[in-house]
Image (cartoon, rainbow, N blue to C red; front, side):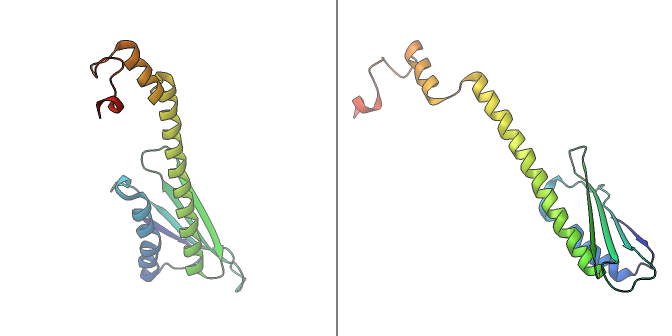
Length: 147
């Protein structure tokens, strides 16, 4: 995890807070897919020098999705740095869940197309068994007749 601060001095307590709030949910959401050498870029910034109130704190996170060529970018503005970190964490979790959902639906789409290509359905299996008189017995033999 690389942490950068812009416009103010970075304190060690902020590093531990970022590790707690950002890395722990990443490990929970991504799980075993998260390689050890993955670098998560986090930047804390004070967007203005002369304002003292309002949404002046910014937290940016760049997270390369493991196994894909996509990088998730999250930016959150808030009135305090802790609130900006929480906002970035929530948005990061939402985007990771959406990406995993897209990947799962892509898998299901591919599985459906394979199924349609090979016509692997119950009706087609029964039809093949009837046509080939498979090793289940003669045509008329079924479970209903055997009981």
